[in-house]
Image (tube, rainbow, N blue to C red; front, top):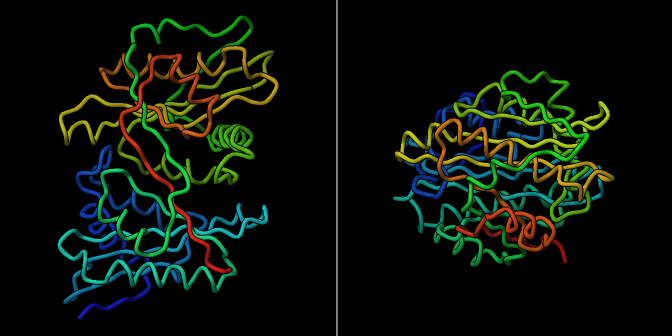
Length: 316
């Protein structure tokens, strides 16, 4: 018999175990520490323990479900939530995942949420099937693109009058992270699934992650006009004997786009990764963002993996 109950901070190691088992083998996913999982769950400013559940069988945690509601979205008038479901492989297909989806949706409806979102990689067959039978429709595709001409990328320089300043994320102050978050929020405003980027989210990564991150800031006339975050996936590289890194997130302020600042920021991140021995550099993009997709293609990135976004109306 399966028992379902709400989680507490005392369950962190159980949640970590479930997430690591459920995500094992997915591209770019690796074993996470309890501190890293805490940053993703219980320490996130939008986390609500009454909207998160553990499924246990014989006292063993076998699945985790969460209804995540970003308050930044609610403040924009977007009544949307996110269903997160993870199940240990040997316990899938017995109704556990469907029950967690039901609980997540019921919680969201109780909070006035009208649209539920979820996501899956193209390789995650069980999750795709779960979302399909639960009534979710695919609404967007995101590509993971691999740089094919790293040697040319590292030669790109910033435009005249633009200065770049890179530093490790662990060396960034709260104020510098708030600046980065403000640039990201401005960059993605009006785009698919937009929400203001909470600085606390990146602060949690800074304080807990076992990987190494670097932020590059671009300034013009002493004003910061752009920034990008880069990741050396050290733990995953050790686990799988790979040499991979990511241009993760960033943007350029309106009024400074189209000058080559974004290209220079990406190139700076790639150069840093190359100096650390990274051979494969990835970047993610919304397939319906032709500007970004075209930029990355012009820099020599090619599509390697697909990730799908799903959605479901909770109230007609």
